[in-house]
Image 1: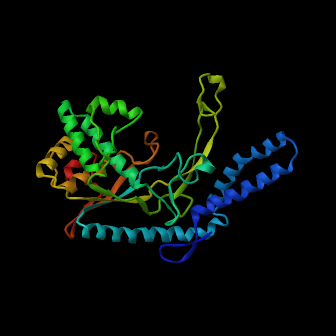
Image 2: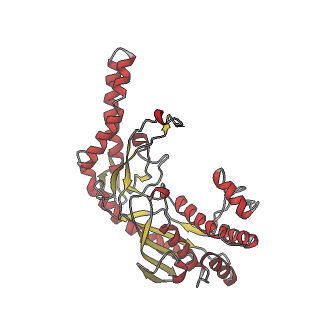
Image 3: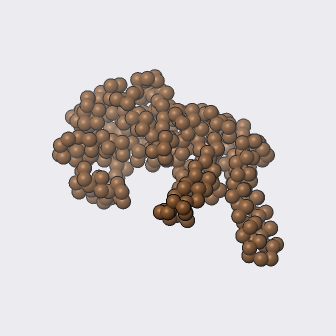
Length: 353
């Protein structure tokens, strides 16, 4: 499957090749099912779909054709992303944004887009994939939602109710909110208990620009130039989407899927708009979140992002997935940058603000 790369060179798309390999195998199965006479024989043929998923994984691990022809373009995609991030940062600065630029590596495996991302049709566990860059990525909406959620969680730890609400209002001014209820379902009760009937009269984007986060360097994987690893989970107590109550009815069914490899380095970029935030606003919010005052609004956002990454951005964080280690961070202001190297951002990231 040939497409035009951002560098205007024809290449074979790795992500679409996976779907192509699967589609060819499934097509063969359905043609075989049509050829047999009885329903039982057809079901037996279609039951082999599970085997097809394993076969596709095996082909990926072996780097078999046609996947082999796409591997070099994964490396080209990583290089192109780095170039485009440099252009993005410069563009944001020219538009009057201060910019937080963070490089972070996955501590273990990473997942994002599990309920509907690419490859969900194959493995039942999706993965968000960009078919232009031909790389996995973390959508900007996920990064922004995670940073806002981390800050609100910190607000909820304050002792006084009026401080909790004031803190939450400042966080929503910064990161935006949907119209009406801020959270729904399970999170709604938690939010109401901590912040009362706080709602947004309108839907607004907030005062930060958040970019999609792409890998800029491969990890310790065995697939896709080291970006991916095969993984498996085995649900015991669900069958047909329903919870199994009786232990004797449990039917463990292994589910194979692809995850982002440990050690994969991502770049996160946030542009911070000067929306008239007073020194008092920055001092109050940073004191509420970190227990000390930040030097600027941009430094405050950098601290929130760093702590969010340390506590996980993506899916299955409760199972140890999608946690990051900060490798490097740069804060760009008015044509110059301040660089923070590994170790300066700890869990108490307010110390480096």
